[in-house]
Picture 1 (tube, rainbow, N blue to C red):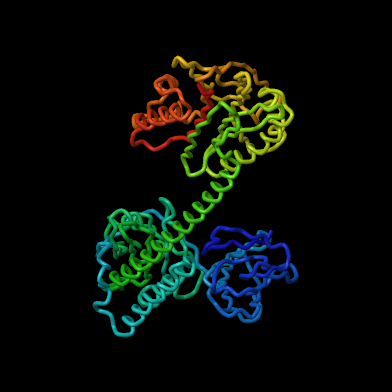
Picture 2 (picture 1 turned 45 degrees about the vertical axis):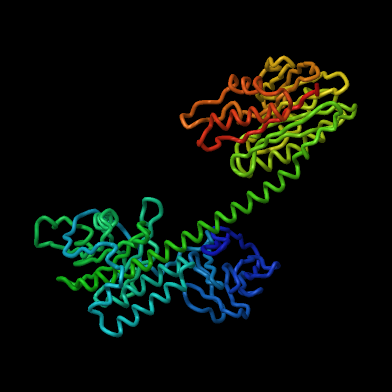
Length: 543
């Protein structure tokens, strides 16, 4: 299936499948809608022509480029073609078409080489390559700096430009390669030969490794006359007699390596050539560093915007924190670990005047867990209608969730149904920590049993129900495992015993219980980061 992959800009990485004539532009009606001021509303069109696809410019203000050349008329697309729309680069792929590439391939060989000249990677500071240049080369070199600045956010065009300029500025070079660092590996991004042939370019792993490890530019030469270097297959078999390699070093980080080589016998390169290649490599490293930092910041901004949106959505599903039960009080502490929470709680008025208090915890963290929790809250409110007890609510909610495909997501949930007239609480638990009850004399005990089956996994799961009675001055605390499993700097758990002690030593009011537990938890954790979402919901009968 033909597809267009965005290679730069805010939509980098997004893939558009092309199954019909498609307009690329900035308008909302465009099939491929780009976010860039340099893109016209109807900028370019991709349409079927026979068994293939063509691209045409639709009268855009800034024109359309294909593989670095401005488009005039129509161009028949082949797999690997790069479209330039404004400042956005788009790659065309069609699995049904052969890959057509004008660039020579790059292959690696093992072996050794004699290093004649080496320059520290930071020697490019202050433009050392300017020394020894003739006027024409110096002017072009300075012009390249300005050009690099315009391409800083277009990585494919940037590496291609540098590969071309290496041959232009180093006339004794026959081939050039630009390799960028992707993790711990070097990936060939652009390669050129002066003859324009597609013959493979050979790179020495040993030279590349030395350049990366020592952070220096080198002039290495085939010393075939010396037996020590006779086995340097990467140089001898390719007819290479000399090679210059330089690191793309910026701000202490290596972003890749550039290489030029010559098939001429002897030593065609000089120290000024090494300095020149190093200066271009350093400028490219700086541009890539800024471009990747920018892409990282844009991605972070998008993530933060998504989290903020998910937080707003989630807040809309949480109750206002008021309990409409005369003679009862409510206190809540709700603290996400990652901006949004997989924890949730709700207060639901039952048809018979009772109130259901629910506290749950969705598997996982982050945006997906938060959105699942919000959806689950809606389901919970609906399934609680006309139900008589918490076990029935859990059973009905569990059946609904197991009928859907949520990619393995599930939740633990405890529900306490309070009868304000009698103080009787009915409780059911689905894989959740058991709630605690604080008696009027300060005694603290757990109610029901912890564990069991969570909701959303087993359609046939059952949820046992228990009951207790709150007397005046007593309270029940529902919470998530972020409380008892909070970790300090030594990775010790806060545990149930500390939780019960904090509840016992409180003043017995709902606000006092939550405050005492929150302070004890904060003292225990200290400066360690919050390891999980924390939710406490305390309901008490006034004395």
